[in-house]
Length: 361
Image (tube, helix red, strand yellow):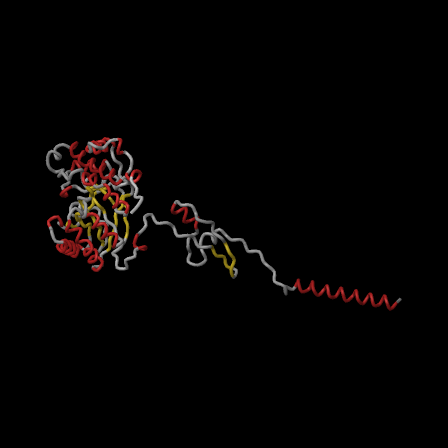
């Protein structure tokens, strides 16, 4: 009996010893243990550990867009990092990045113009605002849109992933609104150039501001109606003749006035090579400038591919001008433009795209 008790006691002792070994192993950490992450401070939560990139919420506050996601803190080697934010959207997309032409001229920068009070640009007449840097060029075209020529100019610009400003004659825009729409769809800036290209420094416009206002405003309304969407409060006087009363009136309408830095006088030329030579020679002398050409002129349309190639080769950079706010038309002049089309009735109130569609080709 004593022997049985002794054996039982020995077995119990061995069991207790084995249990103690297991507990000791756990307490000494020989088995891995998952640790809870340390709390992340607010300063760590706003700047990534690598690169100092802003977190999404900061980007949202800076750009007035919702944060795409909340920053996620992770623990790596006892350092806190923040998942990188999506890049903030740009105000106006630059087409250069998606350009498939490796030799394209592209865009250097886009500038926004606040037209409040009707500021005037172009050092040929106005010296106060000279916003271009050395070797920068702003491309501008007058007197369009015009069949054949305007599409050629647009193609050359698009092939080179660059943009320009078009000062359109209102009457021309009503004849071919499809061309005005194509320019707008391509991201070009569209301003106005009067209703019918009248010289406002001559009578009857010079002595009657009401007639001058009508010529200006009908042009604004017609271009806006042709585009069928926002247009720029940008205006260029025909023949660069800028009477003071008309300039003062444009100031009350918050419409900016554009002269030029370099007039190519392309309207006097019949050969595209002469247009290119005129533009490049004057640019070389001036170093930069708002360049005045005409998409109404066939020689200019033909010259555009070579001109853009030479601008690229010469190290020139294109600046695109956009307005801070679109132009607002006046109802009475909208009505005047509509009245010019004696066949414009309620029968033709619907858009072309809602009436006509291709069902087979």
